Amino acid sequence: MSLPVLRTADGWWVAAEAGAVRVETSARTTGELLADRAAVAAAARRPDAVPVASLSLLSPVTTPCRVVAQLTNYTSHVRESGMNPATIPLTFFRKSSGSISGPQDDVVRPSHVQFLDYEAEIALVIGKRARRVREEHALEHVFGVTLAFDITARDLQKKDGQWTRAKGMDGFCPVGPIVVAGLDVGALALECRVNGVVKQRGEARNMIFSPATLIAYASEVMTLEPGDLILTGTPEGVGPLHAGDVIENAVESIGVLRATVAPPP
Image 1 (tube, rainbow, N blue to C red):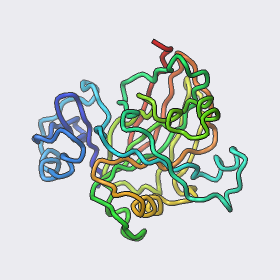
Image 2 (cartoon, rainbow, N blue to C red; image 1 turned 90 degrees about the horizontal axis):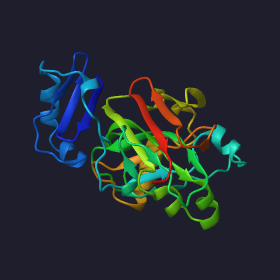
Image 3 (cartoon, helix red, strand yellow; image 1 turned 30 degrees about the vertical axis):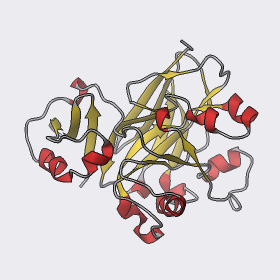
């Protein structure tokens, strides 16, 4: 059974058919919430729901946390980037914790960035500490699945030669709208739209490296803690963003992550 979890400024909620039910917990971070799963389960059984639409949602992943992103992971995107899927290595990079923003926040283009790109991704929220875990046990360390955008300053990426600035700026990782436990990650499919026009489509079963492989590999390098976020890669169709554009990352079992691109302040 899937279990959708939401976050607002004043607490945590569980979404059900009747609406959202507040989780009675003192947890302030995603990691703390995952240590109080009894409260989450209890909320799922209560009837006192409010409409989800009445809530102002924040990212279900709190900061600080690790944001680990797979470099290229869909055959279509590898070919789009001029590389060979048969020889592409498993490579990840880190986005800054400060890049995380919520499902109702704008993506603001910094004044010194000329070319801003979107990359829609399925993201995994770690639920149990993972250190040197075996691939066959890796998904036992996942709490749930959410959606993300890997926003990239493409001109800075090409100029710098490494990606800290290009991918790590404030607001460059919108996350949400919810995190859902109990989903079969391999059965998910994402669709990215810009101003209502479909730009990306990808099925998790077409990933070169499975989510379990990503977690096992990353956990060999660093300890993954509850509340950390794993971005699993983007399919073909990556493209530019302009002020006023509305980007959407949609997965049927999770919902729609939506953001508007704002001009420099």
